[in-house]
Image (cartoon, rainbow over all chains, first blue to last red; front, side, top):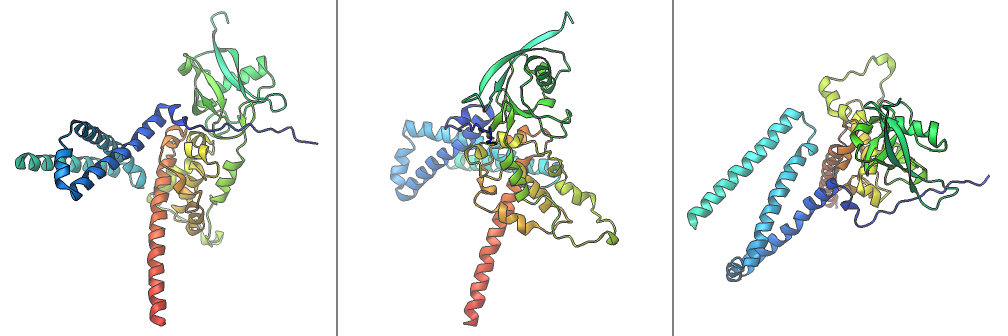
Length: 121
Length: 254
């Protein structure tokens, strides 16, 4: 007897990530990489032509983009540290302390760098 | 029965003999604080639409048969109280799988991938006369979480990478592989790593992480997959180093 099966396959379209807030957050997390490229370009300019870099970073548009890149890096840090426990198969108490240590280091190093920058300004 | 509350729910229907594509149908059902979606589906089958097709068995989050999409989110129908969906309820078959009929999907891919990862102890030559194969609580703790999987497929419905590439071995299968790789009694890691390292293996995962979010048994497949990536990367590094060593030793011989 011929089969009556006719499986229906639902196509995945390019807008799949709009369906759920979780997917949108994921795209936002991955989207922070675009700003990483932007910061790399700015640093490349600094390396190749320090004078152009000095005038570039004073441009209002560049300041806005750098601010956005800063916020993106904060989001990236937050999401990345939240995912760190997944990579390590360790007891939960140790993982919790590890993430706290990572945050402590990040905040500590940031304060030191900002203090040094303020002192040399 | 006069004060019985009623709710209208939308259910995706698809009859391969008649329909070109699935469509939603409305059903009004009685419910109480204790009613779960699976009760509602059974009520519809018994009283309103005897030809409604859906899978179920244990009714208590053990068998993993009754996975469906509720308002676009993968859930087990037996673990979904209607009281949480008073603003509206749309039930569809599990996403990313071909629909056979109504809420029944074709899980062949899923089953094949689980088999491919050999989720059983390999290479253990012990005999019953050797006595019990003891494990310390620490050894059990390494894989215990990953052994809770009930093969319900919700993680595949949550995984956009499986949706985009149905050849991707996917969360549950790789997690089961990881579970046995971590087992101190097992000697089959290299066999499983071949699959895990392959084109459609663990590197198809981009850590969306929704698999762990929807898992009804809190298995955390996203964690298992990231740990497999670490294993896979270390294996690659080791193979490169071994290659270099071999080249060097061949060079010395020549």
